[in-house]
Length: 491
Image (tube, rainbow, N blue to C red; front, top):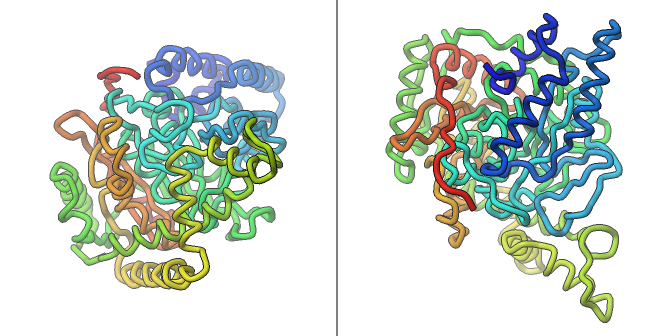
């Protein structure tokens, strides 16, 4: 096997045994990036020189017997909406094309403390607004399983990099499914932690009450290990919860006996691709064979949750993106005669169509006369969504749904129909509205060889139930034997 084919826990074991150096691992990944990223286009920026120098220093310290972190020298890719000192943070936007961050996000500080090595920043839908990574200002990312298809979004670069083995694991952000949906479409494991479990400090905000950073990995074990590294209280984030230290790898138990899993009938009915539906029913059957109890239940949230999500998300985006005005930092238009022109032209030229669409919608629902009719009502419905989930979790440990109603669609197929694109997140959005944890786990391939993922949802801060069930499924199935084919064309 090539070094880039191993999981992180396998690479850690090889380094502990002295079988491989950090520099060898890092160089292996950059060789892979040079081989495949011309087709996939997952990376916006590559930090090769810095990464190799850091790896060499770690190898020298390890050889000299100095204390280094367990994950020292392990590479990672970072979605380009998380700040890294001295590195461009573009958010996939012309607005921030030349913005160099003066500070580290809290998750980056945590990774640096463990001496992980950043390979580069990953492509995304502009300001995380999209479900296909077609809305990046720079280029579209392609799905490694079929280069003519999307990788999902907005963390499409993060998912594609792991699927193409151009990073062993990555960080993404999830506002309405932006980790889980691309994880499903690219055949990797994607976790959206409970809101408040991972600090958002240094994550460029889209919708502050919905955004959450999480891991995309090759397997469930790596997901638990990366969550260990990034989770925890942070005084710089007022929404961060102080729950003490927790080792999520302790919940990687190959046993689901006694677990009760709800299968919401609305998520395997109309609107869900037949192959996806069959795959989810097979997963339910597998869980029953492994000793869990699976029951059909009702979770009628689809349209309510989607409407609520887009009102709240767009309202918060309108507010958060108000700071990008051509004055303080970011893109400034060269065409202006007065202050009003600077504002108008800088924002018109700096933002893409999808971002402008959401800013306009968000400004509308917050405007005088419409606030009560839309935004206030959406917040009330949000409470109903939370209560609906809480009632189900009185009976079930987990809920099982598809992650995406379809497998990856062709690039350009939904680009001209925003509403159809928004519905691609119908299975994931309710989880963000309620602030719950959710994980996408790959389970099978459709007739075209494209990955299908299933989603496990738990009550707030019960990631351990998700890890237990996901690990058990993974240990008793063989999806990881499948590899992306890189078939299809290019831009």
